Structures are given as C-alpha cells and as structure tokens.
Image (cartoon, rainbow, N blue to C red; front, top):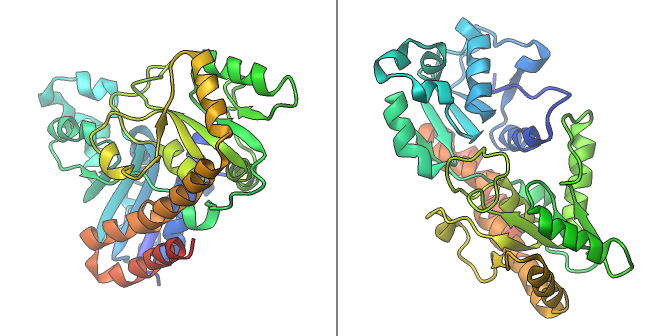
Length: 344
C-alpha cells in the first residue's frame, strides 16, 4: 500500500485551464509513488487503506469544495490531508456573508476538513485566513520543466507565442506583421475560445512543442490585462513558468506582486515592452534580431526554471513541511531536476 494517496478530479474531458492540474498530478505520482483515486471516474477511497498523506489538487476553491463534498465520509481520516489550489479565489458569496454566518455554510465546513491548504496567492493570504479562520500556506506555482522544458536554441521557428490573455491591439499588430507575409510566424489564441479538451495528453504535447519552438512568449500580469475581471491580486501565474521552462524570452508586463522579485530574479527573466502596439512591435523585432542575446536567454531561463521552479522542487518543500518522514522520495525527485540544470 502506498503511503500517499492522490485524490484527483481530472476527467477525460476537461477545460484547457485544468491541464496544469493534470501535469502537477503526474509529477506527484512520479515523485511520491502515489496511489490515485479518481473521483471523475467514480472511484472512492478504500476504508481499509490508511495513507500517511492524502493530497488533493484543484483549479479553484469551488472545485475543491465540490470534491470534498462528493467524498463525504470517504475522505481518508488517517495521516495528514492537504490541498493545493491554483486559482485560489474564495467564493464571493462567502466573503459577502457576515462573519458569524460563514461557519454555517457547506463551503466553509468543507475547507475545514483539510489539515493544510496551499495556494500561490500570497497577496490574498491574510484576507483569506481572516475569512476562513484558519491558516493558508503559500507555495508558488511550478512546472514540469524536467519533462517538458528545453534549452535548445536551434529550430525555434515560432517568432512570438501568445496564448491566453493578450492585449487585443498588440495581437492584431503582431498577427498582421508576421502572419500575412513570410516575415515569421505569430502563434496566438485570443482569436478563438476552446471550452473543452477531448485528448488532454495530445493537446499538451502540441502545446509544449509549440512553446519549445518559440523564441519569444508574451505574458501579461493580471493587474495589467484582465478583460474578464477574474483576478483579485497580482501573482506569478502558470504562463511565466511554462514559457521560461520552454526557453522562451518572456516579454510583456511583469507582475507587481512582491514575490515576483524573489521568483524571477535573474537577468532577462522578464522583459518589459511598450503598451503602444507599434512601439512594442519594434521592440520585439529588435530582440528577434539579436540572436546572441536570445540564445543566452533561452539557456538561462531553462536552467533557472528547472533548478528552482520545477514541480519536484515545490513538492520537496511541501513534503518537508507536512510529512517529513516522506522527504527522501521527494528530495530524490527534486535532485533529478537540480542535476538537469547543472548539465544545461
């Protein structure tokens, strides 16, 4: 019997944003030799098994609460139960409730069934601790740089990669510049809406191949560009770590979150460009013409990311805190990432 149980809610058909949850779970299984209970497939934990550690991963607090309520009394009661939440924004309905009524809600009670909750939202930590009357642990987002990253400098045929939130004026300018002639190629996604992935592994294989083939990736801080009004604070999100792991030069607007300076502290980790599209186009063109600088950025970004921001490093930090007896396995996985950085 495994000492660690991973309770997953990732089904075969998911929204694109949940792909990062699936990749984190894959690294957890590898690093900790987890057994998996998949709620999306109708599986339930076996009461005869008593893991030392139970881990849940969710894209949001809403998904986490749904999974906890679905588990009911089947949530393992042995050992320590922890959760990691990516987009860790509390329900507005809960935050609007008077403080005395919050503990009466299923949402509040579900989250209090967990021993530890980890989120990447350092800017919301104090507020959420006050609302939930419990501790919230900060752990930055990571990436599977060891598996998907690249320090390769040749064959980067995508000039600029812009997936997800990108300023419309800039993407229109870049598309007209690169994709209407033979001057290069701009890959972007803000011209379409994808609500569901039917083959997650093949989709992510394509995603990573495109990113590894890109010289530049665009990334805009939540406070700089948030057309849907989703974000309550500045933070360093998934797109930064994915782009850096793939060896892209990351251009756009750096998050103002205080932790950004600690997470992205090396030369050219991020490069600011103008808000005015025509000026930004000139700045991008100038960098594309500087092959020596781009190659240095590629190698440095991959090396720093696999050494410091690979999920295996994050897991080692989490395990050392919540289940020290399991540290050896987690550290072995983290050492593989650190070793890869030394040979890049």
